[in-house]
Image (tube, rainbow, N blue to C red; front, side, top):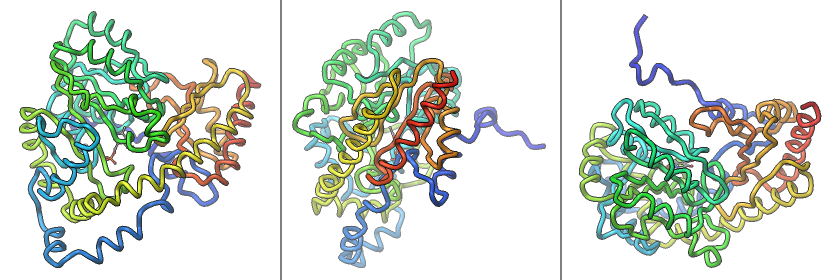
Length: 401
Ligand SMILES: Cc1ncc(COP(=O)(O)O)c(C=O)c1O
């Protein structure tokens, strides 16, 4: 029997992935997937862009490109990020194969087996999986409706024997909690991390999906854009939620010394990210279609979110709580401590509805009285049909506990 490497022998299929196979069965209403609705993807815009590509642009798309990304896309993306207030000229931009690759490259750059790193709890499952695959010792800090608990983080940092290599957080429309971390909390976090020699990885895949861009303008500021001195912030973004995950394009904006290492790490992984995707993404950016597409879908996500929140407010029993999301894809339900979300899920599946249980996002896979509901990928009609079934399942489980 061949032996797998120790770093991968503990890997198991995640419940989220198993659930996704269920979610695609006909007749199932799914609140499980963290992806845009197929029906909302910018197919016509893609047709238009592709039909106008010159032969030389198509050739470029079918060719290998530079590891750090096609120059045209890098320039267009720099302008896009600059308009979001990011310190583009003081940092380097690396195009990656999705934000997932950016996370993996940074994990490879910093983690030796046994090194301590810090995540939020709950945390994006692919990030924890990557950190585990690199054999990190994950210390997690509670993250709630206002994002990471900075006091808890400070206490942990003050008491840890070994300095963590980095802190990984998703401050804007967190996956899975949906939370938008207020500016004041971001500022507190900066104070706590300054001059500690701990890298901050800021995963910002969702901030463009704000329901009230003006009203929440302050809170939407990214930590990287605050340009904190004395902390090396590695900023990660993606085209997945603002164009389509099938492009498999993301990026990192990082200090030069980190970029140099990350570019070297990317080289043997895939040489370059898809050139064809990059040619297309550049056109989306330079024709202003990313902005118009986002402006066209966000009101639809908002409507779905509002429908879900209204139903939940009307139907949920006492003891179950949630905070109304201000953007992004996710709503996070907290059940009473003694209720196991897996029991709720089993009953929901019997009613042909799926979602993701909270334990999936706990780096220690313990806490399971929470549920992630995605509102991005389900029509208003299906939300009206599916949410009452989840609430019924919750009530059934609560009645026997
Ligand atoms: C917080 C977070 N980071 C990164 C990603 C991965 O994005 P990509 O498709 O660009 O790899 C996701 C996708 O769900 C996410 O929720």
